[in-house]
Image 1 (cartoon, rainbow, N blue to C red):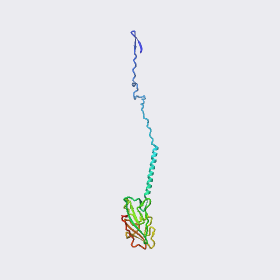
Image 2 (cartoon, one colour; image 1 turned 30 degrees about the vertical axis):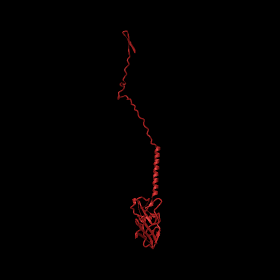
Image 3 (tube, rainbow, N blue to C red; image 1 turned 135 degrees about the vertical axis):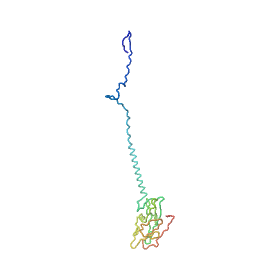
Image 4 (cartoon, one colour; image 1 turned 120 degrees about the vertical axis):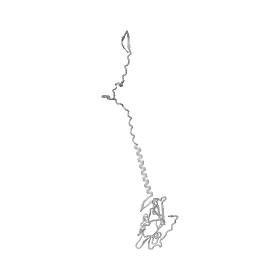
Length: 232
């Protein structure tokens, strides 16, 4: 406190009152006042998250695995195809025997000057597959095995000789030539066949005779089927 003076012989003391605080908001310049810069409010920005890089090693391993898997599938397909098929011969496919396939049999006799000529076994059979036309023994029986999707296919004697890799015409039957002064006679179920022997359509339990002469067997040989072993 400070002393102000004396009044009536008394010393008067006046408490010094604290000066009121000034309102800072009054002194602050109004917003938008021209000529004065405004304080810039600071905003807190979130630190940018670093972009996660893809796992390069994992992607490389996955790509290598897929490549090996695809190569394995291709190799398996190729090996399986080679193991179960062979190139077609004159439209005759080489496949495995399928359940539900159509199967029937034809008998063929070859005669050269009345002497029978053996037809080899295992014609149309390989280590990998069996052709639709094939033989199993030396008895002259031609087996016709057709898959279900090709059951209506008509096969000919000429196609069988193609699978056998032997020629068939009026001038040549397998390894037997028809020399000058000779002729080829063709019989189908005991009836003379005048056309090209290669065009004979193979049918169930058909008996075909090809004979070169003279001399000729009279009448041409027939064949009795064992229907238990060969029902069709």
